[in-house]
Image (cartoon, rainbow, N blue to C red; front, side, top):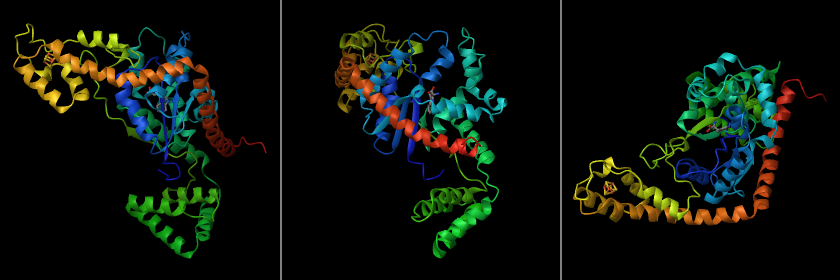
Length: 403
Ligand code: TRP
Ligand code: SF4
C-alpha cells in the first residue's frame, strides 16, 4: 500500500432507512473515531440499493435522507469527514464502466455474495447485469478515491479482495510505459546520490528478501522528496514493487469488529430479523420493546432462579450497565431475589439516555432539511473534486484524453 494514499478512508452504506443500535455500536461509532484520524469519505450507496431494488424505487430517496440524518445525529461530522451520495458523483459510474472493459466475467461470478444473495432473495430476479456488477461498482467506489483503508464487516472482505485484483490488473494493463525502467532510473538519480543509494538498497532488500519494512521505509523516503515531480514519485513508488506505475493503489480492508449489540431476541440486531431498536424509537417504544424481551426460559415463575448467560437482557447490561449494576443482576438473577421487570429497568434507562441527545439532534435536522441538503451538496462537491482527478488520470492512461 502506498503511503501517499494510506490516509484516505472510504466506506459506504446502502440506504435501508432508519438506522438501529446495531448500526450505531457496530459501524458508526467506528466511523466517528476514524474521522478524527484519517481523511474520511462516507457515502450513501444509492446505486447499490438499486441493484436489488430496481423494481421499487419509491423509498430510495427518503431512505437516503433518513440515513444521512441518522449519521449526522450520532456524530458523523461533516467538518471532519466528507459525506455524500454516490449517484451525485457520476465519476463512480464512469470508472465502473472503464473497469468493466477488462473485468473477466468469471471474477464477478465467483464472488461469494453473488450466489448467496441470489439464494437469499429468491423472490427477486437478480440475474441482472447490474447485480452481477455489484462488486465492480464497489471497486469503483473505492478506487476512484484511491482509498487506502476501507472499514467493512467480515461479509465485505471478498469485495475488497476483488478490488485489489482489479487495481492490480488495471495497473498492469495501463501503468506500463514503454521506457518505464529508464524513466524510473532517471528519477532515482534526481533524488541525489545519498537518497538514490538508500532507495536502491531498500528496493533490493524488498525485492530479494520480501522485507516489508524496507518497502515502507522506501515509500516514506520517496514521499519525503521535495524536488521531484509527482509523475516521478509514482514511478519510484511503482518501481519498488515491479515494473509498473501505480495508478490505482490497492486498498486494504479495515475489519470492523462484529457488533456486540445483540437484538431483542439475542440474535444479531438486524432489520430483517425484526429485533431492532431504532435510533428514532421513542422512550415509550424503547420501554415497551425491552419489557417484552424474552429472558432466560428457565425463569417461568418469579421464584425460579435464572442464569444471565442464557438471557439476552444480560447482553444489554454488558453494554449499558456499570459494574455495580452488573453485579446486582448476576447475584439477583441467580438467587431469584430480583424479578425480570426490575432487572430490565436499568437497561431501559441506559438506552433512553443514549438516545436522548441523538434524537435531539435528529429533530433539529428534520426541522431543517435545507441544512442537510447543504451539507450534502458541499460533501458531493468535495468528493467530486477528488474523483475528477482520478478520472483525468485514468482517461489519460486509457488513451481517452483527446488533447
Ligand atoms: N456493499 C457494502 C455493504 O453492503 C456497501 C458499499 C458500497 C461499500 N460501496 C462501498 C462499502 C464501498 C465500502 C466501500 O455494506
Ligand atoms: Fe434475564 Fe435479568 Fe431475568 Fe435474569 S433477572 S433472566 S438476567 S432479565
